[in-house]
View 1 (cartoon, rainbow, N blue to C red):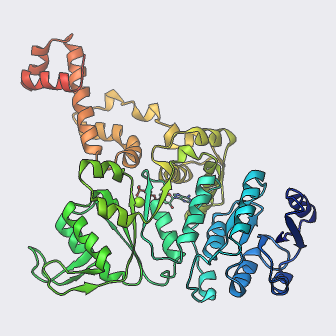
View 2 (cartoon, rainbow, N blue to C red; view 1 turned 90 degrees about the horizontal axis):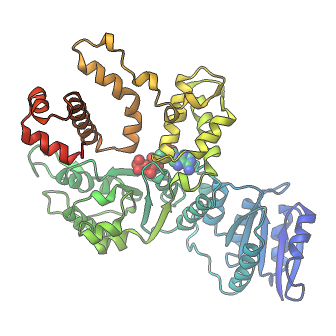
View 3 (cartoon, rainbow, N blue to C red; view 1 turned 120 degrees about the horizontal axis):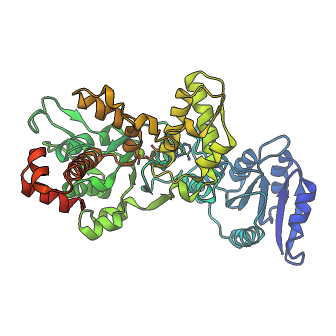
Length: 478
Ligand SMILES: Nc1ncnc2c1ncn2[C@@H]1O[C@H](COP(=O)(O)OP(=O)(O)OP(=O)(O)O)[C@@H](O)[C@H]1O
Ligand SMILES: [Mg+2]
């Protein structure tokens, strides 16, 4: 017989929940208030599982969770919440909950979880061995991870679970999905939260500078190294170092990073002194490291070191239920920043925002809302207020009469409205894309003018016939 204590102020719900279980195998006790739970647990040492609602009249379920864990960290506890809260999910898992479930229950999942938890009740170890001062951890402010999709809740739970370990975390997700946000949440939930969180973008710097950024350098280590410099590893001692766009790190730097991860020692560039730093690594990538390993541009051994825990953030279009919440969140956030009253989004606009593909993910959504709130005078934001739905034809049309010889201005007017989208969708490639598009457009237009006559076209454009032929085949111009 398994003994379960169910703490929920909703008596009816508690009873119907208990009725899902075979009374010959499960014995339920009920409490409606958090204040009595600890006494009950003290008096009933043989209890196998506690199920705790978060919303209790006098004491929050999360508070009760901590109190029980302080007395008996082996007792499995399932935290139940009336609505999805990523903060609660993180906190519950960080404090050692066995599971975090939300109402309404999926009955199968509930039964499975209860069975598992009871199975663990005799052998379960507290997943987090050391417990630092609790007061500290409750004071933490967590950057809010907004969302209610099962994927986001799982991510929040995982962040809570890895909080008390120093395991390296690899965050994988398309651009703009929230990798840095998650990295910060990992840090803030960890015992390192009082120390620094620093980030290095591995794609932004050439090899030597990246190495010096990470490990520091000695005076005179390379041209331009006029002073000794302390690297991010030393600066982050005791904290968390976020290595963004890790796939872009050169093989040489990868091998140096591997050495730090293996034996915690490193040297400044141009130095001989062996230094140590206690740093937790959280890395992120929007490229497939598996593909990079296949191509030989990423070290397999480093990959396994970095992905002790991996967190995959799905693209926004695969978790559209999060969109309305995010829209709401950003409307509030920017209203505060812009010192405006909160404005909302029309039903039609919200529908369109929810349906859109969001290739630039949450960041693109955020930019659109910010843009709409800055530019629009509407009390309720309408579809045309959002740049994504407003490749505004009128903005793209050029007033031919105003065209003098100032082509720069002409092109600028064409490019201005699409630049925000390009920045989101094609960072690092914008120039290449625009240049190709420009060549293609100019050549097509001139060819059309001369009815496809290549001699006249090349002469008029002032390029050789070879160049023209090359572009026609390269861009498949007909
Ligand atoms: N779930 C979320 N809740 C609230 N804000 C979010 C969420 N996901 C992303 N954001 C916001 O979207 C923006 C982009 O997130 P972030 O910078 O973490 O993404 P990223 O994956 O690191 O992007 P990139 O690959 O472009 O560097 C940030 O302003 C972040 O606060
Ligand atoms: Mg980022």
